[in-house]
Each structure stands twice: as structure tokens, then as C-alpha cells.
Length: 426
Image 1 (cartoon, rainbow, N blue to C red):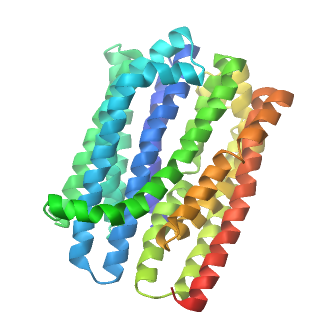
Image 2 (cartoon, rainbow, N blue to C red; image 1 turned 135 degrees about the horizontal axis):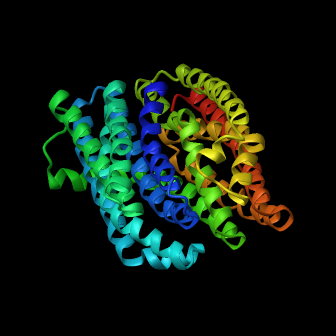
């Protein structure tokens, strides 16, 4: 479940990675920086969609585990509808306020213009991305991890093919990257719809009355999960704003790192989605003894994978900046991350595992508290101290310190929750 989920989720992150890579070949620092600024807004839309997808997976898995097949089908339809409507509202907000948000984050002049051009186009694909991710999570809850992987993998493949065509072939520059992303989102959406409805025939017919009656159960999980997911882009946006006074090169380096992290550590990012259905089905079936085993083995997988990838990044620390034509401060920042910071993501993965247990064991608000705690208490004071004494590298090191602290605390809380369930059975 985790491996196929990782491939599928990494495929979505690969879309942004491909955009940044091909645009970096143009050799214009302002474009790379623009992707860094606008990426915060695009990642917010992705975080919303991931949150709704996790809620869909939890509701479908829990009802399947309890034998309520029809309720699971109805929840699939209802959450899928939400996954399209909510990103559509984000699209409208982007068209209205993109320029103001970019300026607030610290973008200036040509960089702001590039960022606004990218966002106004790529926002068209947000509803398609939301629907595709919802389909993928529901397919995973059904146990069809292979088709769930295909949904997002097709998006990455489509984007990798279309990026150079639109950017260089049609000479559309940053707008071409956005058009390629929207096209890839459409491919992913259609693949997910086909797999869920044509193959499994799992979507129940839409019924407005049932949709409104499902709203309470959906919001009970979706809103806290969405709030949890939004903490990450908030922290990234804050870091970008603090980095902006150090210049476009520093922002460009941060943009590269922000896309390198999810691609490198896609497996640990996928743990919350992959482990969630396993926890949800066992919880629904009353198999409490399986919960601790699932969490412990997930933490072991996280540790082994993260340390292995961190080792690879150390070996590639001098080459990765060259691949992205990162010069000056940008190149130094990327190398610093690879050499000294990457291994800290073992604690980020641990927190994702813990939050999967919170989301599927009736404590989604705990996830919200821990993620926002990391994004505020674990970010703001640390990055300010780091920026004051060591500049952009200090910002990165400060953020890593907060990740470590909150990762440890989240795991402790998860085991306390599981111990309580083992004793009470509820």
C-alpha cells in the first residue's frame, strides 16, 4: 500500500518538479523565484485536495470494514463532489487576489508578473486535481492500490511530456508550464473516474438530500484534516517571506528545496494516506491489537527509507544545484540542505504516521494541533533566530529543528492514544 501510494503521490509532486526543472533551463532567476512564490499558493490547493482525499479514504475504509457497503459508496460520491467544489473556490480566489498575495510574500517587479501569469493559468486545473486525488484515495481504500497509483502517475507522465512542448516548442515560457500542468490534471481526473466508476462501479448516484445529510460526517473529518494540511503551505509561505529580503537567488534555492523534498521523500509523505485505510478498517472491525503493530512497522519503514534517501542526497549535494542551474546563494542553499538537513525528515515522516492514527481513530483535531504547532511555534521563532545569525541557511536549519521537536511529540501522543484504545476498545 505504501509503495504504490508513494509512487502515485510522488507523481503529483513530480509535476511541480518537472515545471521547475524545465523552467530553470531558461536560465532566468526571476522565473525560478516566481515558481517559489507562486508555489506556495498552488501547494495550498494541493493541501486542500489531500485533506479531502484523506477524509474520503477514512470514511470509505471505515464503512467497508464495518460491512456498510452502500454507505461507503454514498460517502465516495459526496466526498468526490466536495473535492471538486472546494478547489474551484480556490481558483476564483487566485484570479481575484494572486497579485496581492505574491506581493505580500515578498515578490517584486518582474518576479511578481511571472508568478501571476503562472497562477492565473494553473489555477484552472485545481478542481481537476482535487477530483483526481479523491478518486485515488477512494481506490486505495478499496484496496486497489495499483489503479490508485495509475491515477497520479499518468499526471506526472503527461506533464513530463507536455512541459518541453509548451515551454520550448510553443515558446510559452512560464505560461506553457502552467498549461502543461492543467492538461496533466485533466488526464489524471479522467483516469481516476474511469477506474472508480467503470471498473469498480463504486460511485453512488448523486443525491442532493443525501449529500447534505453526509455533510456533518464529512466535515467532522475533512475540516480538521484540511486545517492540518494547510499548516504546511503556511509554514512554507512564512519561510519564503522571511527569505525574500535575502534576494531572488535565496528564494530560488528555497523553491528548489521545496520541490526536492516531496519528490525525495514521497514515501513518507504517502504514509498517512497508505496507513490510514489499514488503521481505519482494523478500527472499524474492532481489531485493536493491530493498531500498535501498524504504527510501529510504519515508523520502521519511515526510518529506513529516510536515512537511505538522505545518504543519496549527500552524495549528490554538488550535482543537484548544477542540474537546476542554481547559482550563488541558490546553489549554496541547496547543497546545505542535502548535506546537513535532509536526514531530519525522519521526524517529519514520524509525524505523518502519528497523524494517520489521529485521523482514523477519531482524533483528527490532534493532527490539526500538531501540524499547526509545528507551523507556528516550531517554525516562527526558530527561523527568525536562524535568519538573524546565519541568513538563509539558518532559516533552513531553524525549520528543521521544529520538525524534529514536533515529530517526537506526535509519536508519543499516538502511542498514548493506542494504549487507551487497547484498554477500553473504543
